[in-house]
Amino acid sequence: QVQLVQSGGGLVQLGGSLRLSCAVSGQSDNMYAMTWFRQAPGTGREFVASIDWKKGVTDYQESDQERFTISRSYVEKILYLDMNNLKAEDTAVYYCAARNGILTPYEYWGQGTQVTVSS
Image 1 (tube, rainbow, N blue to C red):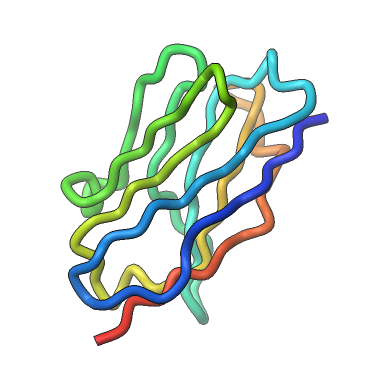
Image 2 (cartoon, rainbow, N blue to C red):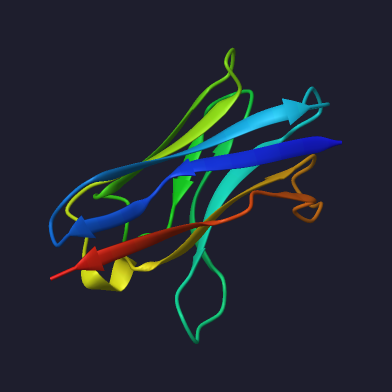
């Protein structure tokens, strides 16, 4: 079992920055990738960015890749999402998730953290 505990988020002004963290505990040796998703009110869950847990290779939603950076500390087992130049449309609940294979579903989820961008 893998446990994911999120921190960070909150209220930020338009154009501001935030860092989200996701601490990993439990049996994470087989973990393949970790991903950030978000869900705005009244919409479905949306892919934001992912990272190969061991190799560190990253992938982004195209519209966010110039403003968001996904990274991880493999030794400390923490996933990060640095978000810059935040827009109103970035307001959402953000979730970290992990899976053990390239074709496997995301088995493990963080509790979610609210990000609200105010004008």
